[in-house]
Image (cartoon, rainbow, N blue to C red; front, side, top):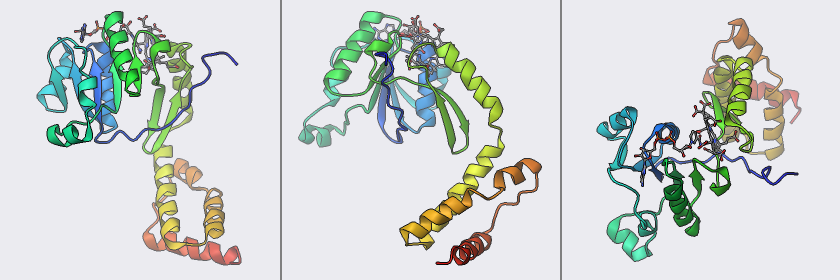
Length: 236
Ligand SMILES: C[C@@]1(CC(=O)O)C2=NC(=C\c3[nH]c(c(CCC(=O)O)c3CC(=O)O)Cc3[nH]c(c(CC(=O)O)c3CCC(=O)O)/C=C3\N/C(=C\2)[C@@H](CCC(=O)O)[C@]3(C)CC(=O)O)/[C@H]1CCC(=O)O
Ligand SMILES: NC(=O)c1ccc[n+]([C@@H]2O[C@H](COP(=O)([O-])OP(=O)(O)OC[C@H]3O[C@@H](n4cnc5c(N)ncnc54)[C@H](O)[C@@H]3O)[C@@H](O)[C@H]2O)c1
């Protein structure tokens, strides 16, 4: 196995987490949009920002420090518990080093890493503790494609191919399964029965029905009826 094939894919809940992007160019803009979509609280440190980022700053969706990165920008947020409550600061949850100056990116990365804060370095994968995949979304369904840094453009091409195979019907299908699973989770306390019902749900022809245009979302009563009927069939 080559050295680069070691990434652990995970899904991070970034809602309300303080994240930092150093740099305000094209790459920073792309990473900012992903973080905002994930509900992060975003700060940018950069002497310039793109027009789109400026717009997000004007709409108060991003806090912008209009200056170059200074040593200590990350460290100063890592305070003792007493100071944390006094200043209301929290250490950054994630950092992106996305300036066009490799030395600055390296400095940001070293500071973040020394506090065990995950950092992505735009110009050099090897310095990053996490990398960003290509992402395809259909509502609750997320498909991520990464090439372990071999080639973002190859990743994009593969993502395009996958994109063609997964139509919008998946959004409705996954929504259906989500609601059914929620109901099963609240109604059925027996673990093995819950598992059997969830397996049973996979044999429903919902996806095909959505594709044929004949699917009607189930009411609470229909879901309940299906659960009752399935329990009977399973002979519990
Ligand atoms: C998927 C996507 C997500 C995102 O960025 O959010 C992403 N790069 C995208 C685009 C893109 N990246 C680059 C170009 C210019 C063309 C080219 O050079 O190829 C374009 C195209 C463009 O900008 O349009 C150049 C580039 N990228 C990296 C380096 C440094 C290096 O390789 O060490 C350099 C050279 C920089 C230089 O030369 O200075 C590194 C990384 N880029 C990654 C992800 C991670 C690996 C993911 C994987 O494993 O597949 C990783 C390792 C770290 C990271 O950034 O997370 C996004 C797709 C957006 C879309 O599809 O629309
Ligand atoms: N990982 C990726 O997906 C990817 C894709 C393309 C390019 N890159 C690399 O990402 C980097 C940024 O690319 P870009 O196209 O956004 O560049 P850009 O020139 O559009 O933007 C660079 C930004 O960095 C800011 N900056 C410069 N010095 C700074 C400092 N000392 N402190 C804070 N901010 C500073 C600039 O003001 C500007 O906003 C480059 O190194 C490029 O090689 C990475």
